[in-house]
Length: 318
Length: 283
Image (cartoon, rainbow over all chains, first blue to last red; front, side, top):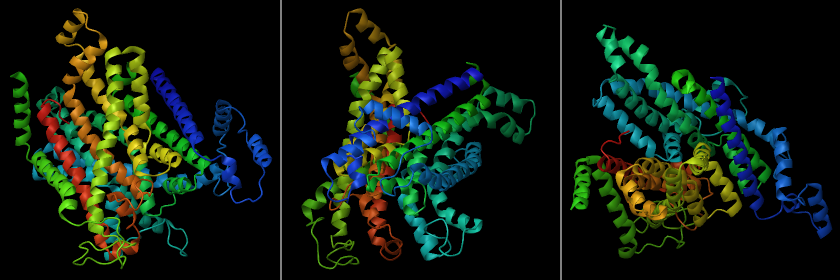
């Protein structure tokens, strides 16, 4: 198990490194020098002023030296200063991580909690009306652009029924309390999880179907175990393995979905910050967000790998 | 003889798949409408009429947008944009992913390790974030969206092809070709590629669906297709305020439905195709 974990961690470290290189190269290809960005609007700048500033920021160094300096800073938690707000990027990200995690983690957990029983029921009675309903739902969920789903939800729940807020995390002026926050979370979380409920249900169904046909399930039934015990003690754990893979694969799409969902609901998370930063070509912030997201996705993948090891001991013994 | 019967088998299996047939019919109908409606009707997606934000009327069956452009004309031209981005960017993914997947599967060893690890990196990192970073560098436009979505889509093709090459390269006819001294490149192009036709076609279908969704998402963020050019995504972008959602549903419901129906049809078609091409390969 130890060796297995170390191997996964190494791969993650290399991946992280690769992503930072890629993002750094991309950002350095951007037109316009950072100095011009920062000093935009300042009048009577001479060529020397710009050059002095560039030297101060280390921009006269070759790109790989700049990258190494930047990476060193990143590893020390210093992501530079935003061109747009002139605040440290780390500080801005710290405010935004919470809201984004709140949405994505809740959506992910709810999707799994809803999909697992749905999938088991669908597998237990395949080709029943219930099974067909879940399959229709998952097809539509996979094809539905989440911003369109969000607009439909806003139309019915915020406008027609007027029972749920359509934007932000809190109401203006009423203070920040948990019930208010939860009410604001409902629509964005539904938007975000909709498609995953469908996908996970299908995967749970097909892996459960497969497991139910296995020899050990027949043995369990043959020795007279109750159906409930067969399903939950014998089949369930093995049927979860493909679902875990699927959950791991959906992290990246989930983040993409969160960017769009945050935009629709004016949710003050990293997605809205990303969009603002791109409009202002605020590269330190863009890179900061990218690096942070890369970090999160990698941690998520490591967790998935470890879960594999727990669910299927053969994996870690290899 | 053998060849035609293979395709007849596939077509036969496909026809029994009702949903897939429905998907195909909807797509064909949509294609016809998008191609021929502008020819038979007088559609001016860029013309600015007096009276912006108008409700549906006889002249403008879906009303006009905030600047006074006809929304029905924009819906049709937006559909052309969506399909264009979907197909062209998938072609780009194809052009990058197929050779890489082929090399990885054929040569194995370090080539395989590097390419497939890279594919893992691309797959595990949110492509939307990468796309946004690229857009910030290149500036948002139709061509940026197409190219960037295309570049990000390569791992799908590479993986499909890689899996298929792994099994095809062990076949007797490849061994025979090697035995008579055929070079690697001709083997790959003449023997392995045609026999990996099914997975590539399937990857292509789902690639188009996902590219259309990505373009619409990007345009919805205002980072994709820019006005005056129309796309379904940027039509929804223009209609995202709560007041528009509440009072002018004709601005956002039609492009949303079009997107949903198009992607759904492509997915159904792809599902049927997968079952028809390879009855063993089931989800």
